[in-house]
Amino acid sequence: MANVDRRFGLKPVDHLLGLNWSAKVQKCYIPSTDSTRAMFIGDAVDLAGSADATGRYPTVTPVTVGATYPIFGVIVGFDPDQDDLSLLYRKDDTARYCYCITDPFVIYEIQACSSAVIAATAVGVNGCLIDTHSGDTATGLSGLELDSGVSVTPAANATYPLLILGAVPSEDNDISVVNARWRVLISMHRLLPNYSNTAYFGALGV
Image (cartoon, rainbow, N blue to C red; front, side, top):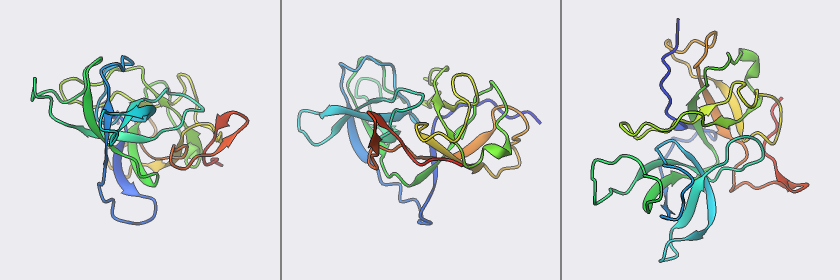
């Protein structure tokens, strides 16, 4: 059975500590000077080292995918754009307030990319994000995926920011083919910093 190739970035689904996920979010700011790229629901972000003019809301920027880069949170929504109320994402080079999950113990669902199959033996190892696809401007959803071997193959490596917890338990999720969906934890989280030899590291997979 082929899996549906429908990218959505990181989607919060559960909580590591056995709690009901509270859906609490932190308001953040994306300045117009951030020209990294457009930003979408499901995008992973990191702190950008500043705040809006009030000083209340930290600036965030898209994370650099791959190893060694910590993640501060995941975008789950935006303030309405008063110039276009139908806009579901943040256009490049525009100022926008967004809402991020910053709880380091939230578990996410993510689709693996189509380069290779991720086997059941990968449960418990680390993985990286990949952004070979742009977000969907119609749905507002991220194009981020779990890298299955384009740039990084999942492995026990504490510099990979995700920890693979298991396949999504759904009848329409077949791990024997590409684009399977996996449950992951952000193991290299900005709010749980570990720093050694000029590099961040997270929970080491087995």
